[in-house]
Structures are given as structure tokens and as C-alpha cells.
Image (tube, rainbow, N blue to C red; front, side):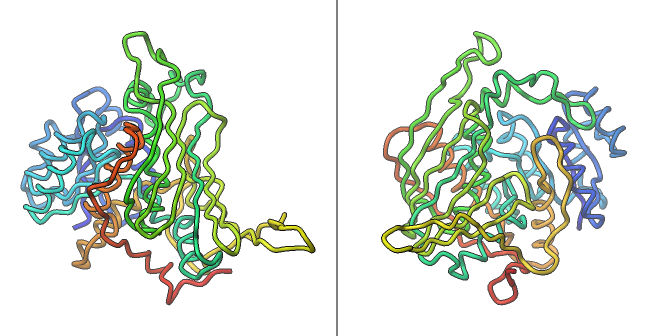
Length: 380
């Protein structure tokens, strides 16, 4: 039941393997990549059986994988996910689910037709930082939430030595894909998934985006927008501003602003990032935001953590592990096709920035993790 197959053995695959090591009950039974030399390097390093073809990996033998991790280049996400679903496999795809909404809808329809699970990254929503923040909101730590500021700025990446970046097993950072797909499609989900789970579906988006550096790789590859800023209007009434860029100084902070103060997170790519509560009060004739913010934590065990790998300290296996647990428990996965589809639509709206856009999809309610449920979760 807990057998996983991997399609795509590039840079991110190593992050998944390091994370999967924290779940000893999950077995990676095979991997495939059209780049045979990369496949050989990956499988030799991680001691994973290589598959000679997709058909071999997806074969119907008793020890074939239950769940496929689609870790291919974004342009291949649709074709690979569709092939895996057609073969009767549950699919967890790297982001984005698809590069356009028509393709994303086709994948969701195929998964529903075949009664299969389909989900997409990121899965940091299931991590300790996000779940701590969410529990604090459900316990009204800052009263009624009015506004959210979310930043996903990665510094001036075009000037970084990105051609030298390599993964643990030696895969180069896929800079051409990163620039051509764009930082919004690659990164917006790290906070969008949190906000959608906590505040419900996005009703409308007003966004602007720009390509400020056109020749990041070469003059033949202008790439996608390297800056976007959107205002999200949630059906619940909350409004959020989300900024993505690979030019502005590094800032991955989140501030959730309510009637009684603000909840703050400094690092979105860290499952163990501190969640802090900053109270607001009046002193004589002045309104004061407390200069001291109190860290709040969930008491007890949460989930396996991983050390920092490059820019992230995230357990990339939380999503696949959640899907496998849902299968064994005969329940819906917290990372659903509906969440993936809504995330895809909102992210494309941010990147395409076509003025006021009304969302056509909605996300089904997302349940918190058991260790962070309102009834059992306790905050220090």
C-alpha cells in the first residue's frame, strides 16, 4: 500500500528522497527519467531500482507503486500525470498541476472518473508552522481577521551563481524551467495553500505582473514575469496581498492582521518557522503594536522534520504521506484535487494579471492535521 514510484529524477527529486527517509513505512519501488544518465546517477545514489520505461514503472505487478510522484519539468506535468492516472495510479504532482486551466480540469475529471486521488505540491500546509498559525486563528488569537500580507521575494536571483547549484546527487538546478515558468507559478502556492485552507476559496483576484529582466538565460528565452503582486478577495471576507519576485531582497514573511493584533511568520520554506503573536493596545493617546512578539507553539509531537537543504527546511514527503494515509484509512485526502485545481486557477490569475478576475473554481474544506485539531491541539 505504501509503495511510491518517481517520474523525473532532477533537482527536486533529491529533496523528496531526503524527506521520504523520515517515513520508513514508505518504500520507493522504482524511478524513471527520459535522461538515462541522470536516472542512473539518481538510482545509484539513493539505491532505487531504475525503470526502463514509464510502462515498466506503471506495470500491474503486485509490487508496483500505489502512488506516483510526478517530479518532471512543468511542461511535462499534464502528459505524465494523465498517463499515470490512465494506468490506475494515484498522482502527487509537483507544482503547477498544469500550465493552463483546461489541462488542469482534464486531469481532475480523469482522476474523478477513475476514482483516483490527485494532488499537487506544495505540501507545507501540513507542516508545523502552518498548522500552528491555523490553530491560533481558530482559537481567535487575534480576533476577527481583516487583512493578510504575504511576501515571497527571493532576492536578485539573475545575479546569483545559479549555474553552479546542484542537488545532493548532482542534478543541476533547472534554471531555464524556473525562469520560463516564472516565480509566481513556482512559489505562490507556498502561502496560497495556507490561506485557502484557513480562509476558504478565493472569489476574485486583482493582480499586476511584469518581466523586468528579459534575458536571464539568453536573448532567446525572455521568460515569464519575474514580479507579481495580487490582491485576493476571499469569500469569507478576508483580503490578502501576495507578492512574488526574484528581484527584491529576500523576504518570505507572512502577517495575518486581526482586530486584536497580528500573527507573524518569517519563513515560509521552514516547517519549524516561529509563529509569533504581536498584540496591539493603546497607551494614553497612542496606538501601540507591542515591540515584543510572543512565540506560540503546538504542544506535543507534530511530524518528522528534515534539516536544511539549500534554501528550504521542509519535509517534501508530507503530501505523499498524507495521500497514502488517506488511502489506508479510506478517507479523503487533505490535499485534494479540488485544492490543486483552485490553487492552479488563483496562481495563473496572479501571473497572467488580466485585471479583475472572478474565480470559477472553489476549494472543498480542508481539515487540519489531527495533532493540530481545535479539540486536541494546545498552544504554549
